[in-house]
Image 1 (cartoon, rainbow, N blue to C red):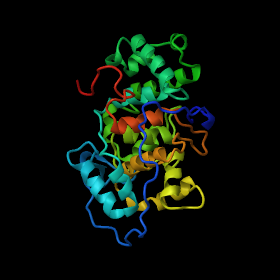
Image 2: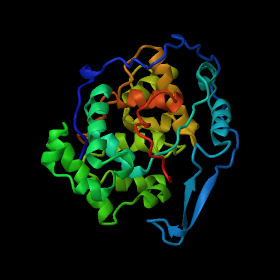
Image 3: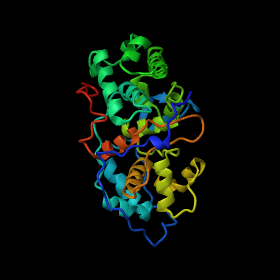
Amino acid sequence: MGEESESESQSQPNPNTTTYLTNVPRQSHSPPSKLPSRPRKFRKLSNTTDSHNNSNPRLIPRSLSSEGELESAINYLKSSDPLLIPLIQTYPLPILELSQPPFLALTKSILFQQLAFKAGSSIYSRFISLCGGECNISPDIVLGLTPQQLRQIGISARKASYLHDLARKYQNGILSDKSIVEMDDKSLFAMLTMVNGVGPWSVHMFMIFSLHRPDVLPIHDLGIRKGVKMLYGLEDLPRPSQMDQLCEKWKPYRSVASWYIWRFVEAKGANSKATVVGNSDVSLQLLLQQQHQHFLDPLNEIHNVGACAWGQ
């Protein structure tokens, strides 16, 4: 049950991407052998137990949008991996936008698969109108739309089936916005990849850009793998299976480190579009570039179409 495939040859330049320094200086010294001690911050769910051990409560890491957490992440990364310091000094502190309801964010991710940003935005706008407004997008509304109605606004039959599968899992109680927010990273990954059309890459992007989870490493992302290769002077592009070990020193803030790696790759002029190895999983064409920009630039509109804010 993977995402739709795409070709790297389809990549288009992102007109919103700012040109930054093209050469980030490398540090000559090696990272410290012993990482600075810093206790991780967790949010405890008192009434929820771990799926693998019912006697232990699940611990959810603090969101990067929590007060002071992003600053703590920056300070920690500068201490744990000196090679990141030039990148951190080159780019401003990321700005995290207001999160959207998980169902809306996942629906939007499915709709943007294999589409350039302009085409995806056009289809999404028509989808909003079909639903009667962005605030009305819900599992019941989506299930009430027929494949024919969705095809009439440019949504393929396959994507229509993905949207309906997501909505059915909400309607059946398998997923909910509340449960998604309260799941630990491992459980969330397992549950979301059960949705047709939602694969590992999409889940990682959702966790970083929608939920602001601090410790997500998109091991299948080509931009991240290229950036790690350049940062550490590796001869070969690291395989996804090698990424956890190579980026171990970034824990528990691998999401923030990944953002700086994406910026590093963009500055080097490399293709930062994602690809996925194995499992027939693919990325949402050009959406990643828009999401990278959104993570820093509030002028980017990829997550701000409409005025429906979570909780309003």
